[in-house]
Image (cartoon, rainbow, N blue to C red; front, side):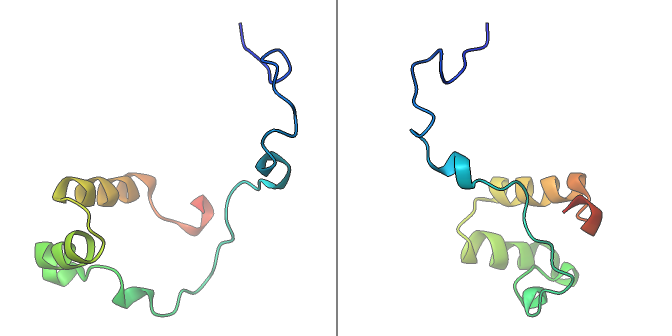
Length: 80
């Protein structure tokens, strides 16, 4: 049985973000300066280490997961 907010005894106003929540995000055609923030593929693992491990604090496993998920998701405007 699926429990609804009412059957669970929750007030509809208990979580105010629900009234303001918007799905998705705004897609931009340009993102000036982003190229300098992303790993340069010509630098291979060194660029991944600089960008994700050192700068962002990810583990190598986290960096691999982040890159893998973007590869599987096929970062395209129509998917944004």
